[in-house]
Length: 299
Ligand SMILES: *Cc1c(COP(=O)(O)O)cnc(C)c1O
Image (cartoon, rainbow, N blue to C red; front, top):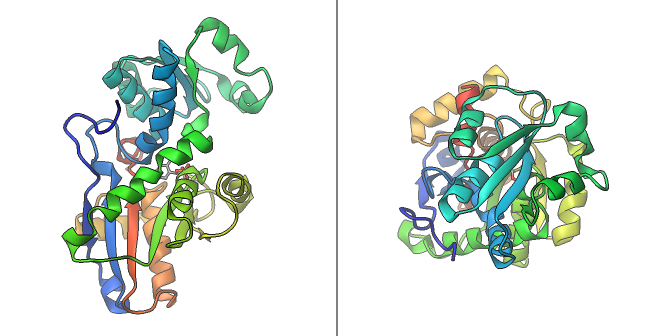
């Protein structure tokens, strides 16, 4: 029912050419989740799949979820709701702000509720959803960021899409995955789909103490992956070296990146490649997890 969005097929798999990869003899291909659709972009689309199916099955009139005012998750949710005929409501962190993302959410028909910071912090409290369920009877509630097992299972499709295209770039196999990690839901989905066949490297866009490891362990156990620090002092922190790296990489390879996830993930990969972590001849798949809509707010 939701297989494939109109105007989109699989995420394209493209060879990535950068001097530091060539220097180390490491081959890298990018799976462009940013290109699956003009509006419903990135890993958030895969994380929504099972939620959309559950909502349709339950005849839910609408979908509710939470996020911040640059949220890629709410953006994908609003676009998917519009595309597939669900009303949508977004519960936002903080006070009303006018960002490009917020304007898109409203243009896509999402009803917005601003919870303040305290109200947003209460999102894990028992009973948090009760008033919203009373206000929106029968609507399907989706955890922050589309996380949990339902989110992870949808990400198995990412593995299928990449494998189906290996021959198109002249590969018969690959050695490992590399991707940005926020909650770790997407990484957990890859680990579950791989069943140990290929290791998954996660570049942490959030500090270590955010409970990401515990979250991944709950979904996918403790084997088959490796986490690398990549947040550079905190989620959403941006330093000049990072921004220069993004600009250089874009100019050289044509690959658009943003500074919260994909830019930090690629920079962390360069650090590991330059440290000799991958032997010459290694073939890596870097997942472009999307998020480019969010960079209108700061790049
Ligand atoms: C949300 C997001 C991530 C992190 O995904 P998780 O499943 O939470 O780890 C990575 N990249 C981009 C662009 C995102 O929007």
